[in-house]
Image (cartoon, rainbow, N blue to C red; front, side, top):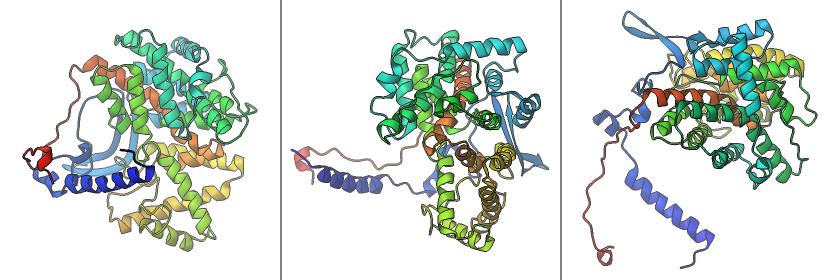
Length: 454
């Protein structure tokens, strides 16, 4: 039986309605069976599923037996991420590589250890012969996260020790992927930009004398040029996105797939697919799109009454994408503040001044301040709501002339370090596959022969 594309579409529309009818679950049943939907309790806190040494989030404090919100804190191996970044800035050096060492091995490296680690990353910063031509440039998709995932899975074919789960081999694979993620993402974008958008094809090799942040800008820009502040800001962004408490969706995905005994490339591809989702790593693109929409519909963005009225329309599902969300505001864990957003904000003002985008910076400040009030009032969120890291990161990337298509891949270039640390920790400590339970609530049915079915 031959079907046209329209007939296939009609069929899927009809059958999806049937699926919704059969599988839509009454929310009251989650309470009846004491199911923590989305692995969260009623307060929204994540159900504890494991232990980790890698990172820690603090967003609440206990006082007289009561859980109270407090300014957010993020620790990498017990070190406050704010302290880390301020230390790098005080010494006027890049910190991505040093922070990667900390997350992977548990302590800050000595000068000798750092030099050795950087040498290893530099030597790993190379792709197999003709890989760029044969893999990255073949049918490049607009979605660079899909290109990145394809490239990671393709690298598995070049690894003779693919399924060797010994720690030295897995660490070698992780270091290789940490090193080449920027190349895979930037080359994937350049290929898409050339073949789909008609732009010149630019493939710059990384420079072994440069940091990861510098190499990203060097490979992305036709003239290979960037300012010290631009590289410094991108380095800080990579550090802030590197890891987040272990319970985030993509890190958990990495641990789940690792627990099944799968290979490193499959683990990282699965984590990439998780990060790609707009509820996880894709939120900063939504922020950038939302801000463009605000500038389009608010005649005078310095008029706070007009701006507040339009933000209210967004919350009421009457404007922008009509989801009722002001993107970049609020977080699943943090309430009073996201420490990553606080660090970002310090850089944003400097970069906006260098780029002559002070008016846009004022707009972001106004949206942040007004959105806090509106969300608290209209959503009745009394614990507090604050800007998260995604609110400012998209603005930062746009000022760095990084295209929207690379916003989430930039996140991945950083988070691959955290995924690697969690994969290694899972291999060391876990001896069972991660397997949560689901309670079956469907009605029993009686089998009927095909010729008796209506």
